[in-house]
Amino acid sequence: MNCASAKDLRMGDKVIYSGEEWEVGFINNQATG
Image 1 (spheres, rainbow, N blue to C red):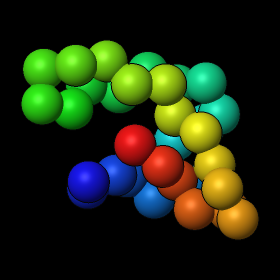
Image 2: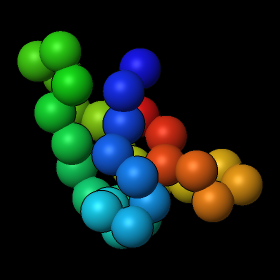
Image 3: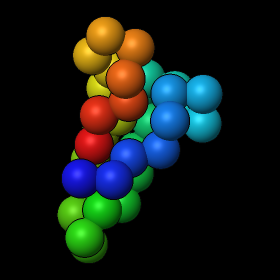
Image 4: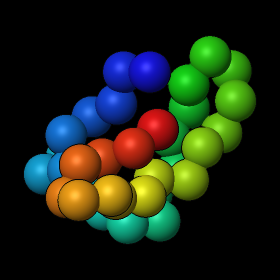
């Protein structure tokens, strides 16, 4: 899954991926989809 880098997103931001809404989370400082 392609996700923006942590510097571009904040915890809790909502992102749209493949038509679905995901809440941004971070694991080991890596942005997760």
